[in-house]
Image (cartoon, rainbow, N blue to C red; front, side, top):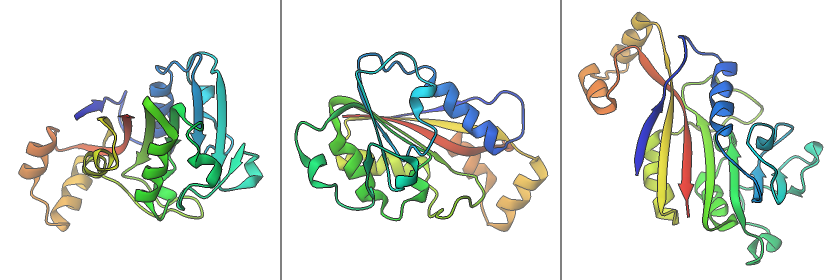
Length: 206
């Protein structure tokens, strides 16, 4: 289990900056010759930012408006066709989707099943973020992924933190109101007092 930091360029935070960090990370991923499943893709597939040409690229979304290859609700038990042993992927992307799900454990179980043995699942989620979209259900800490992904069966989990600098006074006042001891926060996270997590990028290998 590893936990590292994606260091921001400049200061401040916006939704576009957060997405920029995700796209920068995707640019390092080579999908050449791979079978890929992109979950909750809408109209922004990960293949726009990754390297190479995949052997097969399938999309899955709950909303048929986006014309995915498979229309499915990943909060539910997987559909019959996805239970078949032949439906396995080298890479599964689930980017900025999990926060919109009401049944995250089932979602992660589905992701695990869809990944081939030896394959990789890439998950990204926001942490410090405004409520957005019609259904915005949950926020996750890195501790959630440390606990749940191995429990489901993933053998290796690497978590990269997307961080940003924030106004020091605002950050201190927030923690004071919440009764959070700053010494405990900074010692645990290894960060200065004006750094905040804005999200996580998770690499889970099966």
